[in-house]
Length: 332
Ligand code: ADP
Ligand code: MG
Image 1 (cartoon, rainbow, N blue to C red):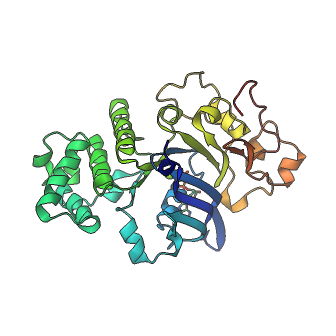
Image 2 (cartoon, rainbow, N blue to C red; image 1 turned 45 degrees about the vertical axis):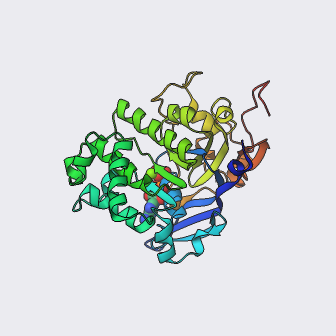
């Protein structure tokens, strides 16, 4: 590994995003910190509502209008949260691209796919008109759309669900971003297409040395594609570290819960186990650990004090007063 590869391109520090609804504060993301290096694929997992999408959206400044965002998002040394809307638009879709959970929300139904690709290239590259068209075809071809040249003048609704997802990826990757934020990019797709799209993202991340944050519900996907993983619960990261350590020997009881009933070798399409109980409402978060009400090993301390996210071994952090004991022989 070269020095360059070990440099983080994205540094998120103490990110907090709080919405307000009817005078009530909803702390959707609380004190989230992590790094993404060039070429690294970081998995972000957690139950629905744990703040994964809001985290990704906040990185790109997309939650500014609806909520209060504090903390730092350093993109190649620049604090994204200090950029003007205009500067942000330049970063967005160019250096940093996002694939949204809902493909139709980021595709314009009224414009042809070719035009949408070409607009992105116009905004973020200095390719000539002819080169833009060539590149648009090349991108569609790259993501596995047959007869790419003839599909440029088609509208999003003329593509099947899987093909539409590919179009979105083609647009996201057209300007060769250095970071891709992928929010459950394959959840709605069938198994075969899901595998193909993930392979594609992984291959492109290696070829282009692109960092990726991959939000997914599929532990098999995390095991197969991610180097590191962060587990979110009620807006916070509760455990974080190398995938091979976290998935093999979870230390936070919540991670252990998600992994329950998962066999030793995590197969593709292994969904997160649903832990009994429900996450707390953001309006009434417990004073102590947010997971304590559902936790089998909670103590008095867990109900009154919030466990900080602390380093428990090299490259590994967990926020728990009673972590699951480390497996003997595990590399610390
Ligand atoms: P997920 O982990 O499933 O992606 P989200 O990040 O979408 O979860 O949502 C985290 C929490 O923030 C949820 O409780 C959601 O209802 C809330 N939330 C998201 N966007 C808004 C918004 N614009 N206004 C108020 N609450 C929101
Ligand atoms: Mg989401």
